[in-house]
Image (cartoon, rainbow over all chains, first blue to last red; front, side):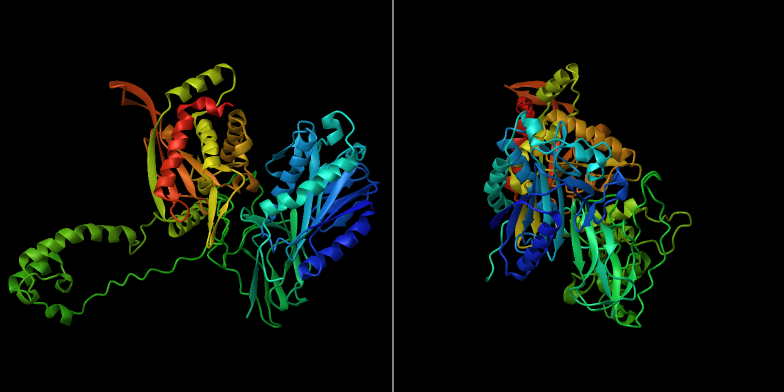
Length: 210
Length: 428
């Protein structure tokens, strides 16, 4: 598992990199990779998402090949794009989504923030609202896109949309939950530390010839 | 030869998927490996590849529509070939109330795989082979060849017994009068069974009814489970006196929980220690599930649904009670969603409210076991040598023998009994 810290990177650039890595992982020429990054402010919407969830007509989201509805990415939010082969692990999308949730819950707990799942509403939640969003795309059983964990973002941009297609969906961040500043680099380090081990535990890689 | 494209199964817990978009249009050429559609389940999308080359002849669902796993959603064939016409839509009355958006009806090309209402069948259901009832009628000549006295022949004729099927106990296999009696006695039972199994030769007018979709889904679900999972049953008696006291206390402190909620919580605690009862049999391996998702069978007017309380391992008794109440209400009102009935890893079926002492239930497909719970009733028990009345409940665990054995089931029930008889452990 290769973990790459891309710092702040434009959405389209990161998407192009994901596409390239996904093709490589499917072909067996690239190792499974976790990209960790922040985006400059951008709205994206899943292929099945509804434009009706964009409340502000000035918002023009990028429509992308992932599940879920409209969301916002921007500074202070840790984005993770795991490019992993479920074909070599376990062909089970729900299991993969539950793994991402478990990872994020564990990372939140590292900062003494208790977050949980709400059945049927993929992502992780606290009393205050949604702490992290998840939206995944899979081609030839290789994953793309992934999760966005609100660490210390300005939450105002979420007010211009129905996050994840849920009207009035409250959004929260690790900083708000922890009641103080949470350095994004530390959160990134926790994700990096936990990712490979938990993935292996939940979706064990099957040994094969290569 | 036209090839059918079906809604893929992208997860063991996926029962239906949403078509997001078609990447090819009808009439367009498709190469093997081309992405032809995008399908969504939960928050994950999958790009669907064609496994064959040809022309996209037909698409059977529209973007935004849901289809059960295994349903044919498109047909790919050669140029000039036409898709097989879908059979006429059956007129089965819908059991769900009209407020619910109607699930996409798909023509059953295979034995119809839709399982919307019951929802717990993740697999495509394979048709059971036709059972040939090879009741060969012996020819007259053969019958005439049986050794029997004229008296026995006459008796046989009167009783309508075919002598060719009677085992003779006399010399050289000669059929005696007592053989007839024996045959008659033995056959009475099996003939009655055969009668019951065979559909009446002509339907009784007014006695036929098309299956509702829910009925059909239940029929497929239980038949699939019964056919694949070798069931066995173990029953335990549980003294619910202490649990009822705790329940009363909770009620007084405005935290109402039902006996069933306590059973669900107790099952969750027990399943943590007995992971095989929370597993799926997958051919060459068993899949042990991390999450304990307990389904609760809810009776409806003609059928049942099984809403699932997810992640029971991390829910308190109070949270289980709350979720259970909401799910059951939604289920009865027909407002339950697909995700709320999918993903179960264990099921509890409670007929206590119907005054049933004990019963055995059919395991839900892909699950390892189901707990059938009877009523809490006053029963005599001996305690310290004295006969006393106790509040006793009988619970029967149906288990899939491929995954676990009798002793495992017995230990499971012993642990469950321990938890329910020491209910404080459920409150911490």
